[in-house]
Image (cartoon, rainbow, N blue to C red):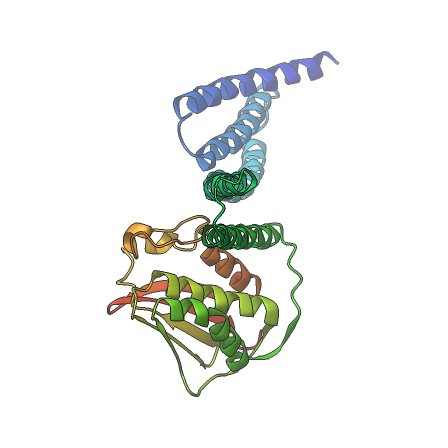
Length: 329
């Protein structure tokens, strides 16, 4: 029993020395990344085991051969432990970064939505009070107030719908039902929906006459993607501009592009156009009401949910959005 206690004391003392050195290293490198911290923790653990084994081996007067066997065994285990630790550290760091970005996006979303709701609600309240108190009474002004109330109500209703769709995407609550969808029909419906907005701004929507493939996808979500892209391009294209939409199929993907004449997006903003609440009015048409800034974020979520990808790029005089879905999706 006395020998066992002595061995434990040796191992504890050796491990304590290594642990103190590791604590000092962590304190010095406290500003470094999670990967560095976890790697140091794993290394300290392995080093403490090695130090304890060596100390006990010396106390037990093991032969050089036996000590080498023990150290080789510990070294092999150490290599595996360090490799697993570094891999885990990288995954943990990536998860922490994603969580931080998600939290930042959530705060931005709350701030943008609060701003977008506060302004129309204040206007609605003022107009409702004016009507209730008979501040306005002539039929023309009353009719104008009613129209403005309806427009603002529709705008807020659309914002709430976008929020609901985005929450379904982020929560993984989408229920996709892939079927064979003629892309020409989806595009035709989206153009019909966007036509009034385009006509009010004098913008032409030009669709390719042929080459429309059939894609295996969830039709409601695909229709939302196409409609959001068209509405976004129409909103940011100057009056009398043109929005073009085309599609095709190659070996691996079915693709669809929406091109406009908005003047282009600054290169620094291109990676952010699909972020929640990013509008970038400075890069587009100044003063244009751009909605809640959720349309393109919804596009990316719905496309990625179906195994596809979407990207934005500049073309001569404007920008182009490209959606790609797996040909066999």
